[in-house]
Length: 251
Length: 285
Image 1: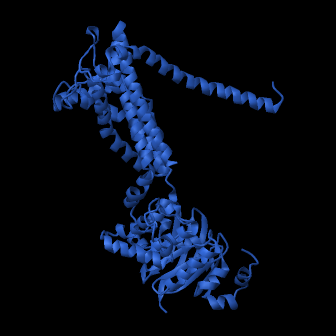
Image 2: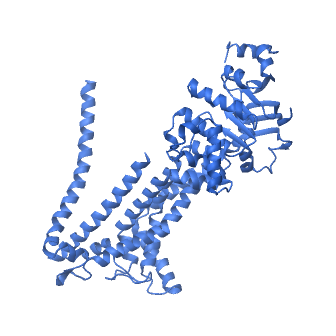
Image 3: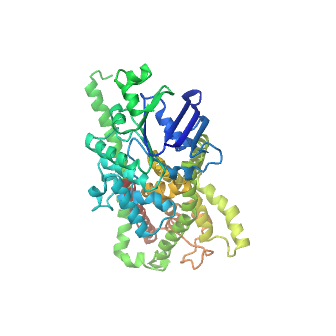
């Protein structure tokens, strides 16, 4: 198993408030890696460094290195637009653009310069199928995406990300606002997708992490407490804090 | 003092209702007054002869204001051609590119433009724009072009401020979603932010038009006020507002009524524009 993302000594501070205090972690190719921890542990900030969305925050100070395929994406010369095409993101709150279902998914490919209609149709259909949404929307692709239910919107956002043909997919608590059935559909989709992508799933839901991830990392107050295969972390955690969190003693 | 809190609430409510209704009453009275004064002439001369008539000679019984209607629209569109792209660009810069501090300084400064009296704009037009046009482009300088430029500047505060509010009301999450899909800043602005703010931006243009078509003082100072449809942008022209302002002081009898008819036409045009603008703003909600 090879390393896709190698993070070393990553520190992030907003003004004087240090959110990440030296994170070092390797994320493996074609796996689902779970990031868990109570709120304030820095999971979301870590995600926003990997896709460089942190650039939009004022006063963010970043130290350390994040290598994707051996290339440091925190280099000054990194093209962030190109990076975000390789690193897709699905946010906690689904945010479809105020356009039709079709246009939401065709948006990314069009930005890359794909104008061929047959090609776009193919990408839209393929992405929706992979996100387990196609059967529900195939007859109303021109409907406004804002009219979909919350669970459908989130799968639309996943499909939209897949349409970019990224290498890495970051999911920031994608199921936090969803019902169990929608959650199950997203989880099924992710388990299929890891064949082709490297997936990082941020979640507060330890059961979800246990269900679908291959590796798990536990963060607490900006530090990586423990990182191991999910099986070992959930059966024999080596740190007491991890065990307490998994058992729901705090969080 | 009223001790009973319920009564006090009632009192406050009724005082507010009274004031609200009285401002509505003013609007109503203005409308009635202008209609009352102007309609008899429509009856006497005929709607068609006034609105589509080419000849304005009120002392000789000709009340055609068609050239003025056309001129009013020409200066309004001229103002829009100059003011809309400038204003929208400015609003986009303010909303999307400028930092917080610059925004806090620039926005009130631009809104100050709206507070400059229109006679000052007219004065600047006469002193700078008119001579420049006369010397470098041609004609007398008092022209459609000069008027459009000044009005274009005058509608900037309206266009900027309402477009800016429309752009700022686009949720930040739309922008993040677009960036996360690998869009550049400009792609995000023109494919996501502007379409989402479209109705507000259109409303800003229409309200700007309303401001331009109603402007009087600056216009009579630089338009040249000739009574014909201009055949080039260097020709002088007279607007509906200009007509009223120029002649009301000495007009009597039917001439006076003719000016009120001009007012009715103006009022109807402005009402239509405002209605369209409100419709646009409501659709955004």
